[in-house]
Length: 531
Image (cartoon, rainbow, N blue to C red; front, top):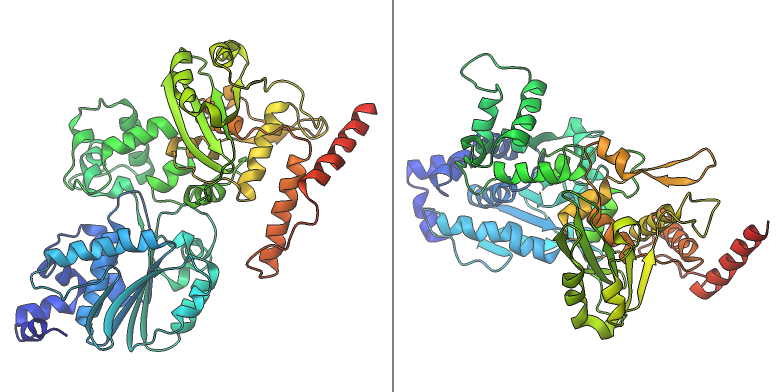
C-alpha cells in the first residue's frame, strides 16, 4: 500500500471511510450515490453474489469501478479481477470509469496502466476480456484471501468462464458482481434472476425509478408525500405522460443527474419502438425481453450481429431500398458487403429518388445489384437509378415464392432467408437501434395450407408497431433468390448446433458445397412444379 495511504489509516475519519463502500464513495471518491446505488454498494460488501440488470445509461459501470477501488483499498491483500466480452469494453467502459474515479479521489492512487492498478504485492486490480480461447482457464490462476470478481456486460460472457469463476469461489472470501443490460433471455446472467435467484442478491435499475424521472413519477401519482396509486397504475400513467406531454414540459426536461438516462431520450424511444419492443423492455425498463414465441428473429441473434465484426472483403456491394408509403414512413437504403451491413441512409417520405441516386453514384463500380420494393408507390422509384447504369432488380414481395410449399409469398421466403442468416451468424455491423427494434418485432405464422406467413403491416399496426422500413431495406439488401440458399443456411445452423452440443469450438467442415446444394434444390423445385 502506498505510503500516503498508510499514513491516512492513522486518521479515524479516513479509516471510517474505508470501512464501507458507501462511505468510501462519498468520503474518498466524492460521489453522491442515489438510493439503488447505495443498496448495490452495500450488497457488494455483504453478499457473495450480486447481479445487476439495468437500463441504458444507468451508471452501473461506474458503480462497478467504485466497488473495484473500495475492495483493493479496504483489503490489504485484496485482488479484483474484472472482465467483459471484448477488449474495448474492458478498456473503454469499466477501466475508463476506474480512471475517472481515481482522478476525483481525495488522495492520489499510484499510476495505473490501461487495465491494471497495483497497490502492493498481492494487492491489485486487473482487467481482461473473454473474447479469446481458454479464458476460463486463465481465471483459475487468481487466488486471494479476499477476491472480488466483476463481470461487466455479463450477458455476453461465455458459459465456460462462468464455470471457471464458480470453481475459484470454493475457498476464501470471494465475492462476485455481475452487471449488464438484460438483452438476452437466457444463459447464466438470466439464470441469476430466474432459475438460480436464491443464490444471488439481485437488483433491477428501471429508468422509471432513476432520479431524472422523479418529476414524471410524481405527476403520475407516485409521490412519497401522499397516498400513491398502485405500481401498475403509476407505470401506465407515466407511459401515457411520455406520449402526450410536450417536449418542453418540466417533467420531460428535468435532469438532476445529467449522466443518467434522460426522460427526453426515453420519450423518443417510446415513440420509435413502442412499449412492446424488446429494446424498450431491456434498454429503458431494465427487464429481460418477453419476445413473442412467434418472433421471426431472436433478439439474441440481433445482439450478436451488433457485436460481430466481419473481415474486410472485396465482394461487390448489394443495396436494398424500401420506399416510404405514407405518413411518417421513411425511405431507407441499406448497403451491405458480404455479411456486413455497411450503412443505412434514410429520407422522410417517398420523394427521395435524386438523393438515393446521389448516394449510389460514388460506389457505382462496386455495386452488384440494387434491390428495391417495386410494389405500389415504389414501382417507378428506381427509374433514374437504372438509367444511370446500375443493375436494378425490382422485387414484388407479394409474388409467388420459389418454394411454394413452404412459403405463402416471396416476402415470407426472403424474410425467412434473412432469419437463417442471423441464426447462422452470417450478419455483422447491425448498429442501428431502430432497425434492431423493427427486426425484433416482426412475427410469423402458418396458414391453413401450412405455408409460412409474415405478419402484415396492418396487423402489426394494431400492436402499435410502426412500418418496419429499416427492416425491409435490410431484408432487400440480403435478398438472395438463388435456389438452395435456404438449404445452405439450414445446414450451417445444424452444423453450429451440433458443434455446441458436442462441446466443439468450431463446426466440422460442410460436406456439401454451395454448387451441389444449388443443383439439388433446383431439381427438387422443378419436380414440384411438374407435379
